Image 1 (cartoon, rainbow, N blue to C red):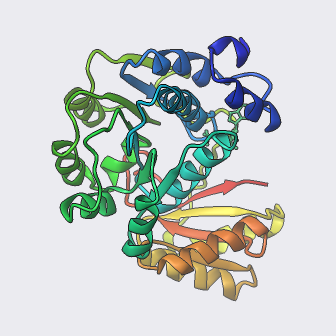
Image 2 (image 1 turned 30 degrees about the horizontal axis):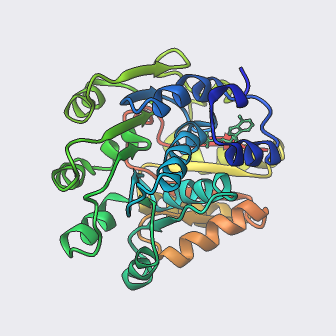
Length: 319
Ligand code: AMP
């Protein structure tokens, strides 16, 4: 299958070509036609499968079509993400894929100036990418108008539930138009996810490109049985002996992330911690340093999700 055969707007095809995407990924082949038809979708997709383009490309196509037929209204697409970083990443994708179009994407998340985000919204917004808390604040303070919303996307729905956003999501839903398209993306499926999806989706098309709840195919997993007090020494040994250059370690608590980062620094490994108690500026600096290779190890805590319940620390070799 080619991108051209999916019926996307020529300006979108040109941009996809410019980005060097030759063929759609499996999730894109399956989801793009269904999203273009306006149907609800429940998709199982890991990060790295091209899932962002699977919803961004057809939604940009629809907005462009509405604009050309003068049906354009403020905030047609709302994407909810569990973290600020994912919100920034999804917003950057809309900007990247829509570069040849006159479509405006705005990103809104907590820990950053509300006024700056409101100013950006007032300059016009077709796509809003937001985290649940900040979106709720914007709705409650009547700073945004979501009455013309056509499509709601829940990205990484499983992580949203893991992070305790269910009440916020339910309050947001009460303020959105009932008649809309809803796209639901989750890396894992369990009973909670199915229960949430039932309250959101109407006759959804179920799309699963991998067998259910599998990890990404390019990730090799290993388990080391080790006493708790020797975990940081083992980590330092693995990083040093295997010469890993970019390492992400997940810990169960924020304090655990800080303590581990300190231990690793004492072992001479350039390391920073990353979690929700850090200021937005500090989080952005850590990520930028990590991407630029200035930090070798980066630590972040994540709530003990069902996916990580059996592993207090996960080391990802990204080199
Ligand atoms: P995602 O799963 O949305 O986080 O995307 C993972 C990466 O795949 C991103 O860096 C995208 O730019 C890239 N990507 C998405 N679709 C394609 C495609 N069809 N061909 C090549 N790369 C792609």
